[in-house]
Image (spheres, rainbow, N blue to C red):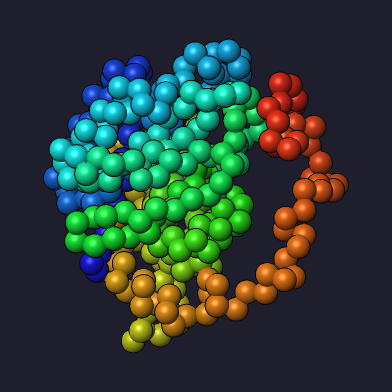
Length: 304
């Protein structure tokens, strides 16, 4: 299997659960017609990333991981013979989670990931953060690819992609709901480069509040045999309009590249990295709304 095609569903929500189900199903069918092996939704597609400041409203709007909305995409994945990464606010205790479920082409649930780095400077402080980064072997029929996931703000922490790389991730799926500007795109480019892996990001189109499209994919191959110097690892970057963008990840080339280049895990010195796992936060990074030991915070400022 030399190439993996991922469809980035750069959509605008329909306004309600039924509308998002219908629009999402239509988008997946279009992605399949375009040749996609995987279709990826933006962050929290089930409600268009509505995150209320009221914790009770957050709970009322959450759905279970086996809700008919989610199972409809399971069935659709089986029907289309295509993997689907569907996103939603998951009903969970003590508070909902921001979750991605990946169904394989046979409708099997192969990966469930809850956003680890919740935006605790905003309303997401009332949600339960995920507690692990996980990977899964995704059967695409023509071969298998090792998939990881991170969601939006996870991108801003190098540890997210690094841990996934250490677990063998070859492509990271990254649902998103924020303005994708030069620095956020640079973060994704860096995560792909330093870990020698692909990153596929699906964002909402312009028209969704605080979003501007620019879904993107990076292949992580900085140096190509037979070409001088380094190259831009960008595969595709969408504009701002609603639509579906197909990213072709050169998986075979990426695997050969990872066997010979110097990044990733070849020359790390983890015995010197102890401060990375310290929970201590020192000035100037102290924030009153910092989540302590995973506990849900019920108050605080929006001091980012």
